[in-house]
Image 1 (cartoon, one colour):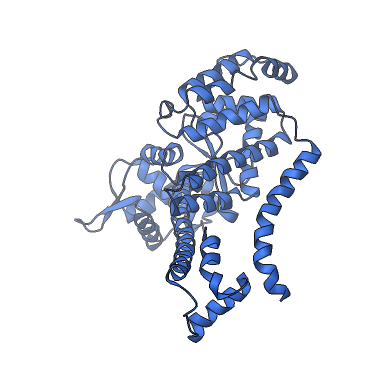
Image 2 (cartoon, one colour):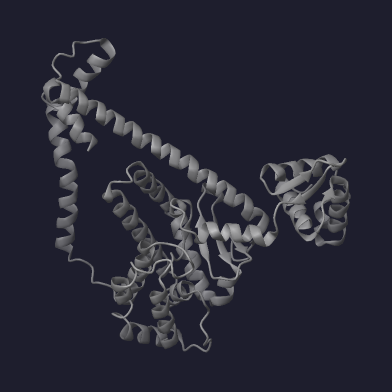
Length: 296
Length: 128
């Protein structure tokens, strides 16, 4: 959007973007004559500048707000939670419902587990949860969350910003799931997700061996889990735990169904095509705008 | 010498445990008593905690909004603003709540799920 306005505004100023920008810099800094720009061109240029400033400013503002909340949260955690033997950077808080989350903050990042979670999960399920959270921290997902939260904050009326945030949230959860799968079995992770999501420990602690569990979950319920996401999640999103939004509910369902019945990876040729397509879509217009200026 | 963070923790624990407001002097005695009996004795090898240190810790906690002081009396008496359980609830509300930018502040293992979905997942658990 910024680019479009910029290009339109600079159109009379030069044949390509670089020449245009050079002319514009001359107008702004050296008082060169501005007669070549019409009213609408000036309008578009100003709008582009405003929008850029708005985006950058919101990004910084969101950063400050997020950091303040995180610091406050960390302060309280330091007083309330006790360190866990499970590893450095892991805290346990005294709370009954099963909760696990991570609080990013560079070297002071922590993963927080609740008493309820520790009680509900088997050791290997707990490891799956911890690996999942550590993947968030080590892959710096907080940066993605920050950028997209800021974007949404800056343009709340723009539907793409909300969709983008939701999609990014789902994708980082799946990335973290994949990281957890490297060390723990799929069945373990699914059980961990199911236990935490249903908010209660299973009533039957007498479980079969892992391989056994895996086959039953895989064969019986591949389609079952996907259905509620399609039907009910929009209507009653505050019914459970009094919180959240339909978006995150759908994320959970998608995660589980993705684990239960993984789709075969795209064929190699097709994947290359998609990647090349997206790359070209980004590169070609940019190149067309810049290259003549660089060559000339 | 214990770090300020540890001291803040110890002070809050004592304030949460005690029902009434305490002066800095009493707090120092409580802390000394605690570390004497606790296994934390090694943290203060034969060194008494200065009242000024306790006052520093208390005013830091006051700045964080965790402790309030009664200014009517001299010396000032300090007490916890709210109970330990309340603070935990506040934290958990922040974690579980649907504040708009909560999603950016921390990443939860599981987002909220709907009731029907929770039921499905429970069924799934029952089967396995």
